[in-house]
Image (cartoon, rainbow, N blue to C red; front, side, top):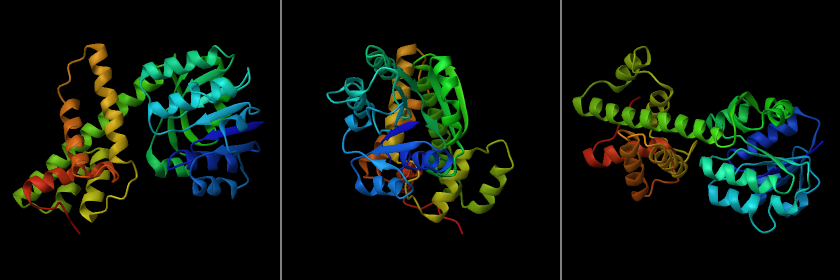
Length: 295
């Protein structure tokens, strides 16, 4: 089978390379970054210069940064809806609003092309080791037919409902992660200001009710002062903004997430958008005039 992959950057690249390594399919890639393409072609993929070059693929994956790019690649001039052939399946791994997912599915369906929205969670490390989680919205039969492909680059793909529900699951998951991380940043700064041994504080939390993956991730980055992007703060801001919009659309009062969104806005205002989302703690460090570091 011919597989296309559009967007082979920090997240798409590892997933694409796992498909190459774990299947016997012919994989063709398209990306504006030649270096990202080269990391895939080195494993046996072929490169194409345009979306139209993927017209003969049975399945095309997209992994793109923001909904506007997804809309351009799928429904824009020269996009998959215009160049793809009836019977193709498009699997979008990007994080979108539910409305974007539904609109893209409709644009493709009008051309006889099926779609699955399949946002992922787990970050770059889990994308690389093939243990990423996938939440899939779309037709259940189409999902069932593509499960072997999902298994080639993820540990679990869950069909969560119709178009839009994959985005709902992803936005809520990320909202929880970022809100937990913001609470961790606040707690760690309280500990630093109070003078407790931060390593001992982290040890206590890790075996107590305050433990979370977000706390572990943030504390390890903050203690080392290393905020190299695993999940960029700019992308976290985009995802949380979409989650807050979802809360508004559903009428759910935003008691926590809007405040965390403001924290991310402040971090971006400090020029931290390209760093890891854990760099949100630098807002507290700047306000308090002290760093959260530990051996």
